[in-house]
Image (cartoon, rainbow, N blue to C red; front, side, top):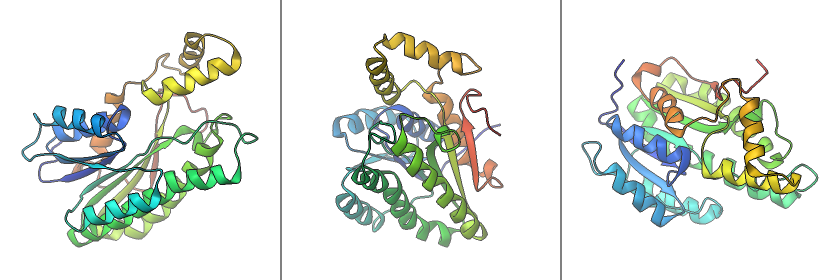
Length: 261
């Protein structure tokens, strides 16, 4: 099966590294024009350089701070006043770790702005073109923790659950316009984020980082941590015409980690 995204414009959040970067590269390899979006100018420029050899049109990037909602909103509104997006990948950095006794109401508000409000705003801005074109793909990077909460990620558990329930509602409302909305429930992947969480957990338990990582691997039925490229293949399929009848879904990509149905 060949996937072609030629003549499609994609906006990919959190794409200066990790899963977001892998998604951007694969979309570009499949022919899409990609606009990167993240807070690291150096990281964005490095990825943009990698994208240059793929696609028929020049790629671009947006420098944004997901933690500053007002500034983020101004940047996105200006971007959408001049550009149209067919494929939107909602992805941001994760909020700080901590269990439910370690985070405060203000922490939840910051996480809400970071993980929820930025996603809703970006999606609303993208929808105008998608509806007029009768075609669009909205893909949310979520987490397996919305089904099986992780005790050390109280903020992420809570707000990402809000994102996937909002996405389910949105999928129903915009399906008549030929637009799909899907959320991906992310398991363990080889990224800087997982490395940071692993290190913090090792420090809390007073053990080596390698021990924490090995335990994580053992909890995954496939006995390994995923590669970001594998994640990108799923996103690219969902972004294509081949996935036109898939919407309102929460799709785990976790090597079998989730125990629930």
